[in-house]
Length: 452
Image (tube, rainbow, N blue to C red; front, top):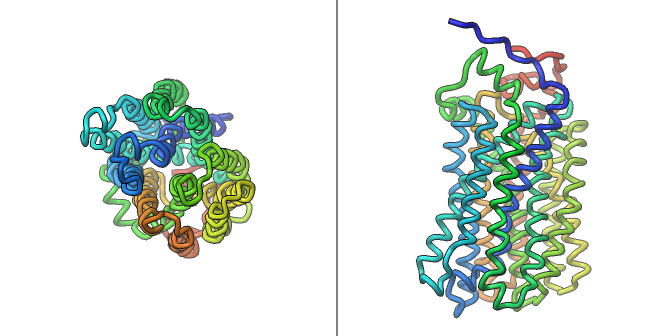
C-alpha cells in the first residue's frame, strides 16, 4: 500500500491571487445570470408570463418567482455542501457554473403565457429552481477556495473577491438590460428580453475555462491526506457547530437589503405611483455597483486590521438607516437624490457587511465542514431574503407605494445580523489551521506553517 505524499503547507506563490481571480470572474459570470432574472422579474415577466389584466397581481406573482430560487437554495446547499466537503471545492465551482448557464439559457427559450397558457409560468419556476440550486453552492465553494488559499493575515481581502464578483455580475446584468429596456415595447416583449438569457452560453464556456485550471486548496488536501474527509459532514456540522450555523443564518438575512434594493425598489420606482423611467433606475443600480466594486475590498482589507465584527456591524446598522433614505428619495421622484442615496446605501454602506461576510462566516468553521457550514447557513438566510421581495410587495399595500413600511420591514431584517455579529467570536487573528476549534485563543500568533 503506497504512502500518500505529504500535503503542502501553504499555497504556492501566486495561487492566492489566481484563486481570488477565479472566484471573482466565476461569481461575476454566474451572478450575471442570476441578476438578469431579477431585472426581468421586475420589468418584463409580469406581462410575458402572467395575466397582465391585473398588473398588481402579475407583478406580485413575478416577484414571487424571484423568491422561488431562494427557497431551493437550502436544498442545494445540503447536497452541494456535502459533495464539496468530501470531493473538494473545485468540482463544485465548475458544476454550479455549468448548471446556472444551462438553466438561464433555457429561460430565454421558454414560451410565453400567450403561447402555452399556465404552462409558461410553471416552466419558468422549474428553471428558477435550477438557478437556486446552482447559486447555493457557488458562493460557499468560492469562499472556501479563496479563504483556504489566502495568506492568514489577508483572508478578509482575498475572500471579498467572491462578493465583488457578484457585484460585477450584477453590474454587467444591469448594463445589458439598459439597451434592452430601451427597445420599443413590442420588440422588448417579443424577443428583446430573451437576449440577455441567451448570452449565458458564453458565460458557461468562459467560466469553465477559467475554473477548471484552478488547483484544489492546500487545506483540503491536507485534511484528505491526514485525517481524511468526513463521511457525513452535515452530522458533524450540526453536532459540533450548530451555534455558528445559527449565527450564519441570522447574519445572512442582511441579503434582504440587496434584494429589496435590486428588485422591489426598481419595481416601485418605475410603477405608476412614482413613474421614473426604467433606464434611469437601471443606471442607479449600475453606478451603485461600480462604487461597490471599489468599496468591498477596502472594507474587507479594513477587517483584516480591526476585525470582522466591527466592519460587519457598520454595514448592518448602516443599511437599516440608509434604506429609509433611499426609498424616501425614490418617493420624491428626484432622480439626482435617488442616485446619490442609492450609491450611499448600496454602494458604500451595504458593502461593509457584504465584503466581510465571506471571511466572517467561513472562519467560523474548520476545513472538514467549512463548505457545508457556509452553504447551509447562508442559503437558509438567503431564502428568507429572497422572499423579502414578495413580502415587501404585500406590505407596500394595494397601490404598492407604502415605502416607509417596506423600509421599516428591511430595517427589522437587519436586527438578526446585528445580534449574530455581537455574539460571534472575532477570528481575524486566528491561524487558518485553527479556525473552528473550540476554545481557541483569538489572539494566538499564526505559525508559519500549517500543521495537522
